[in-house]
Length: 147
Image 1 (cartoon, rainbow, N blue to C red):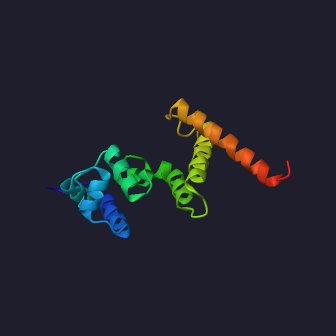
Image 2: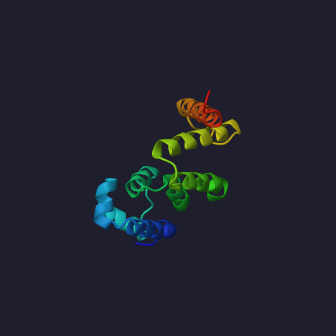
Image 3: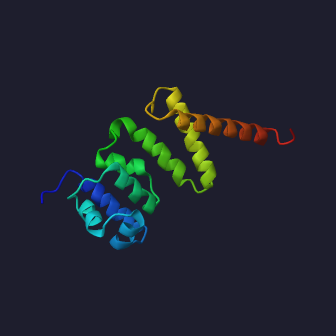
């Protein structure tokens, strides 16, 4: 079987799996994919769907967007800043999970306002706007704790 142009993805997945101290079988179970299929992805023999990448990213607790770029699903040049920004937010140890999600929602809201990510649905936009309002309210409270 000839290797596809997803070797970079496979190498990255293997590195992330090892960093998480998971065996191939453990990751396959956690992601809900077969052990042989995951092995083929790691060796660059298969190109997984976005859904499979999302499952694997969730199991590894890493950004699905990063995997999408490495798999060629997202345009690396156009989306690199977005992916890097999301990765930095998600990796920040000083924020809790709720704060990270609200910050990502605010970020997405601003991107949509500026004409990026327009293919997202209206519900996500409303959620992002609500998150932006919550962050603004929180910032105001932090500046004026006596009010």
